[in-house]
Amino acid sequence: MELNQIHKLFLACSSVSTDTRNISQNAFFFALKGPNFNANAFAAQALESGASYAVIDEVVQPMSDSFILVDNVLKTLQDLARFHRDYLGLTVVALTGSNGKTTTKELINAALQQHFKTIATIGNLNNHIGVPLTLLSMNSDTEVGVIEMGANHATEIALLCSLAKPNVGYITNFGKAHLEGFGSEQGIIVAKSELYDYLKANKGLIIMNSDDTKQEKQVGCYSNTFSFSEYKQTSINIRLLDSQPFLNVSLVDTVIKTHLVGVYNFHNIAAALAIGSYFKLTPQQLKSGIEAYVPANNRSQIIQQNSNQILLDAYNANPSSMGVALENFKGTQNSNKLAILGDMFELGATSAKEHLEIVNQAILTKGCVFYFIGSHFFEQKTNRPKLLFFETYFDLQKHLEKTSVSNTSILIKGSRGMALERILEFI
Image 1: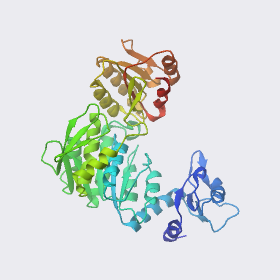
Image 2: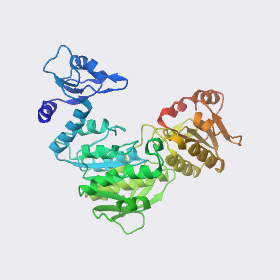
Image 3: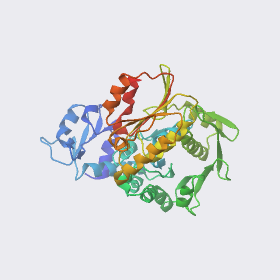
Image 4: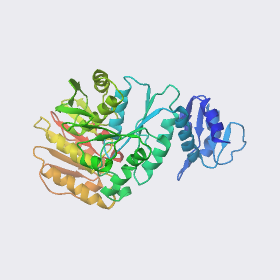
């Protein structure tokens, strides 16, 4: 079946699904497969659960007109997403980077929603499957798509750009994330800059943080940019006014009071304001959008629990984000401070070095107790005052069950696999 024919069938459906556990009526089902699963075996079940069509790449018995047999389901999902993006002809804003992607994406969406009908990446569905699914969730009413792009190896951003075909792009930063896949910090810069490469080749707009010298270097002499800075002469100036406890910023003469903590979130806010300004939103519209955004999903959440104030930032962690989180936490106005830090994953051969650097940063941090959790941090165990090491989460849990923590500012941060939000039950 030709792609345009598949697209017509897709348009007649109400949703897209890749999981038979979440099938809605009149869904369009893609039977994806991987090393440990093969959804072709559940394609008939998808139809029985309400799907109108199931895209398969293995013959299912008995066959019917509701099965769409293709050579490769994943490739068809991606090709259909690209075709649908072209069919809609809407504006797409894409972003990638080492840290802050999801928060920045949410802020951009919150800002643009004040004027446009937008669809943004749900959660962090930002890979070779998530991006196509996001594109296919857009319809003729959508005016702007906001696409988050994640990667853990080279050429992945280039692939996602070929699907989403962004008109506007922004890179949050170049940090030490997924070093195992990229090989080095320079490898990260080259891979993330595949977004810039696409925009340059297609005369797209680059949103640039002019206070980041790495960004300026990668953008080079490309002229189709919209830049922002605190003090430089750029397209727009956004200034940080205050960061305790929440960030307040100014745009033109408008003060915007956010629900975000940590100076590291300033450029995430500034990028959203810059993009909104480029799209001609007024400062008051941007103020309404940004002030309405409240962090969730274990990202920079402020939680008041009993007598403790908790900064839960346990969605993910890498050496760059861990370092800035600790630096920010040092400024907390409380004499009782506890940092609970979990292992950082996907660092490859640099893992021991990077975990040791965080431990050394903790040693130099005055007035704070540190709990380190996980085998990587445990390998760097040192007998220092106010530094406790737990090889497993359950070792920490046993400690917390017999330890009283009160009137304390607590930072919880670690990689997703550590699931440190579980700690909330014991504090």
